[in-house]
Image 1 (cartoon, helix red, strand yellow):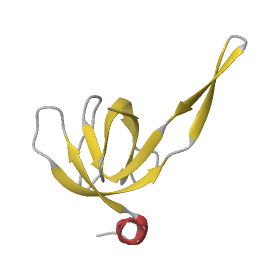
Image 2 (cartoon, one colour):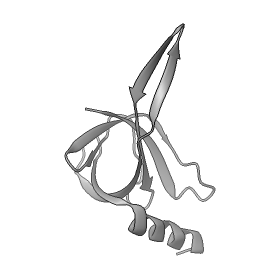
Image 3 (cartoon, helix red, strand yellow):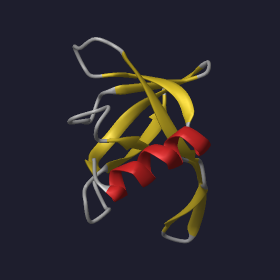
Image 4 (tube, one colour):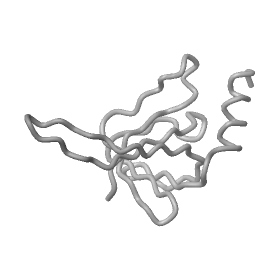
Length: 102
């Protein structure tokens, strides 16, 4: 384990919340996620639309290849992954997934 992996593990242990990740057509996996739920204002011509968003960070060591259509259940809320997940950190240890409520 690298120092960076240890830091990611410690961050998810301290700030993460328990969730269940279910790949499309696969078996559920227990994971820890870091949730970010910023509201987004989307411009559409002269109109501004308030959209509820939910972005989650997952450890790549727990979820090898998330994809669109997979589901993430946090508490009693279930979300569907939309768009392609990204690994933005230099060591590619964390997936960032954008979701929408089911």
